[in-house]
Length: 148
Image 1 (cartoon, helix red, strand yellow):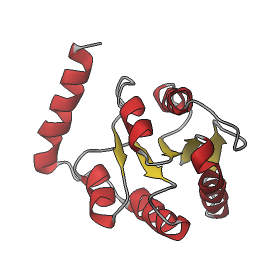
Image 2 (tube, rainbow, N blue to C red; image 1 turned 60 degrees about the vertical axis):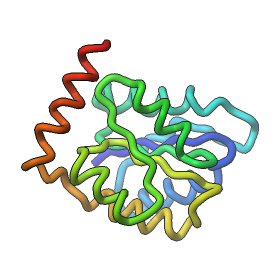
Image 3 (cartoon, rainbow, N blue to C red; image 1 turned 90 degrees about the vertical axis):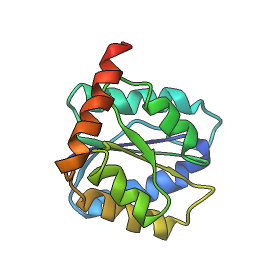
């Protein structure tokens, strides 16, 4: 699986840890920035990351900023993208199992790096359950297309 990672300056160090962790596990990783701790505008990074998924260059993405909230808001503006803030095991699992989420968002000012890596591993292990969740995700997709 090919993954894409991105961050703002607040999460640069976390992004580097996440990227190294993923590469050590054998994933091919596209890094859309940022590449240092200089001030940046997180919406630009979120857009770049989501475009990689929309264009088929990656299957899933991990966005990181101070809280994960701004990245999730921006990512969810992109057509066909479902992004969720994941800071605990239950919401991390449900983001994929119930919502078929392709973008995990985390806050470097909220979660310890070790916890972030543990949740990332669990997120990547999860699969969409379908079943009673499928009509909900289908309706999300219909609403998404309706307003494009």
